[in-house]
Image 1 (tube, one colour):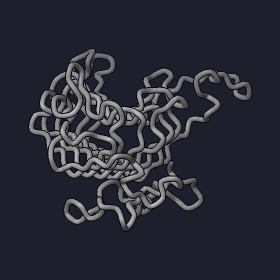
Image 2: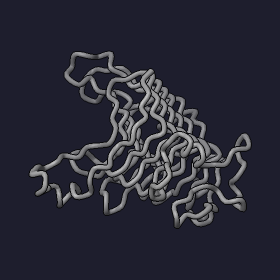
Image 3: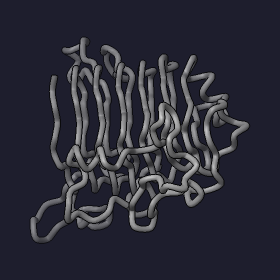
Image 4: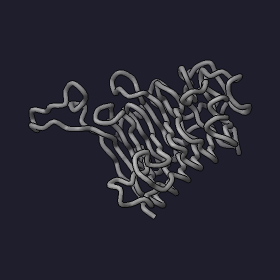
Length: 277
């Protein structure tokens, strides 16, 4: 088992597009991502602050779980049994990109990836470029579990393409729907995408602000806007659910979305840091 407990980034904002040349360092920096796994098993990524990543030499995703048989000599390459939990990802062009199999060379699969109890804030928008998508899944990653996350992304919840992904779970997350929500290549958003790309998926207990209940499985919630979710103090970056929120004490007695106390206990939030907005 590999454990990662580290404060990643940020890339200095003076490196952003249009200002990539830094006179004090005399170099042009190529920005790609904040964290990438290409061939890894049994990895725990817990209690980190990952921030400051934008569209440049890659497309803006902050975190990549992308199987790569890099030079063609390792067809056994895989990304499996990975847990990404209790992290804050902010100030980025997009969230997490998962590649089920190497799309260039022979590889093993990506499978059993859990994304739990994370906060994604300030993802997307003109400042960072990228698509603003929270999650992208390509080439059929198996047994991906996404639960109890809170996200403030400007783009889609999920973008998917390629082979179907078996065993997908999307549960008890709080986030905006935005224009397309869950969308696949060649399919309409919502249930059509879920049926085509995620057979047998479990999608329940989510609070999807601005979404259309008719386009998604039953057992989810669709407030009109993020302000209707009932955050403790959204303007100050406090994304706990307030006492009066109707989405408290949902599945198994737990609040939907991220457990902010668990983030702090894991070290992703510490005293003296600015609020995670």
